[in-house]
Image (cartoon, rainbow, N blue to C red; front, side, top):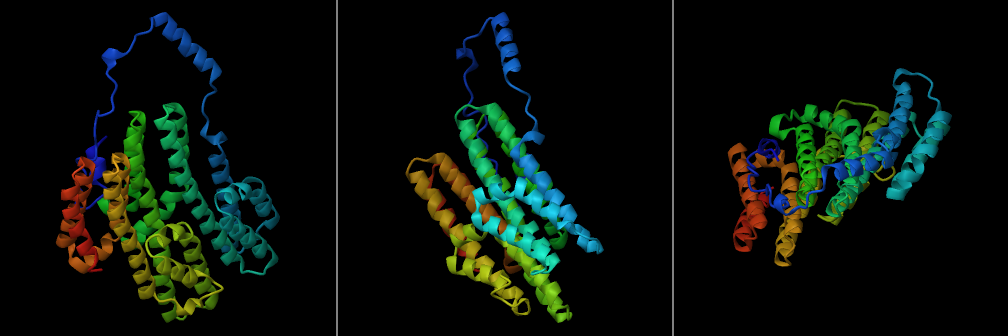
Length: 401
């Protein structure tokens, strides 16, 4: 595990005690050696029996290919070119519909209705395009979460090669879907270095892969939170930014259709994190969904400050929840789960980094993050009393938002 990769993730998070290098290594001296000839023979037999892994033949790769194909066809409308709606719907039906429905039936209904309404003209074609694109991205985000869980289970049961193959699917989703979206957020908010969402995703992938290669199922599970919550942050900032863009566009006198187009994008992005945010503040999460819904709110009435306040309330609720869950897991003797919950809490706090910098200033915000790191360290070390002290300090800072 490379500590420098982890240092990129947090401004002030040192993360030095996260890595328990070598803690689960097998004593090589205790292993029974096979005769060289027998070992070679078994390796050759295994090679003959097991077909080479091809990422392009996985369901994930085929779904991503279908998504990109549909997206490319729909984007013809941006150049006033004719869209082949029959081809789009056919590709969706054969390669995406059932998979999306398996993860979330609401996503499936939204994407199907968007395409059919775009074809019929019942919904503006650009709005239909945005609803399909962003809701499908929400599906891929949820699929990534499911893959991470499956990989953790495979690794824990000793099925390392299967786990590595499945992780290639996560990397494919990151490269083709998540990173392009995160890049736009980095550019919009001028995020670079340790604040860059793209860099955080890369760091998460790197630390996970190192844990995977060393067969450390516990570390893999913990570090999945870096990857997952960095992607989460990109969708939060995407939805939040459209509220800002819509309000600015209203002041500029933009047409209603353009406003609704942006509102549709915000709604689609928000679907990825809606259910999770409900666990932090259900009322705030529901209100956000209503604000972004085309049939419930007139785009002209969207106010950036209200949206931002609702997001902060829900994210603060998530952080507080993890400050309760982590010590509870520790008390129950579930050290790995305690580490997972603590890192989740800190990654949600990372989402409010810009807000903390604005409210407290860079130095105080840095101190707050360092305290959050000390809280994680105490949890990882099994020191409940020390963790409680740091937790109280972190939560006190969050109350200033």
